[in-house]
Image (cartoon, rainbow, N blue to C red; front, side, top):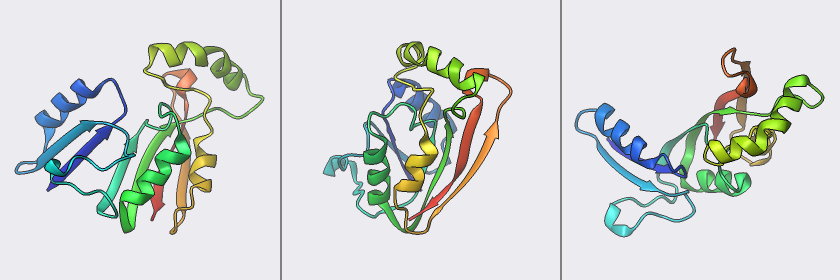
Length: 158
């Protein structure tokens, strides 16, 4: 099994250590600090155009600079029928007390949490991205970390 980990986060060294400790026996893990906007170097042994069965995104869209471009790149690297599995924290509904709290805390959150935005409407971006097989989105609220409570999880089908 080959696993390619691309991360936009400054937490890259922690990610590498975690992957090495928990990898599946016999797997090859290639990692690079990057968004998906270009293929990895040829020496990496990976070509990303329509070559990936699944992309797993966990709390990614809050921190990327361009959500539509990121989703476009995910679609580009997925094979036909490939899956994008995701979990994201998102903005609370407009007009709620929680959304007011998120609006106040958002500038600080970006500084202390590696560019993370509290007020992104990620569901809209996912629905507008044009995944050929559609998108199944589920909404949940988590009790811990009140300002991060609203979450989405689901699958987009290429």
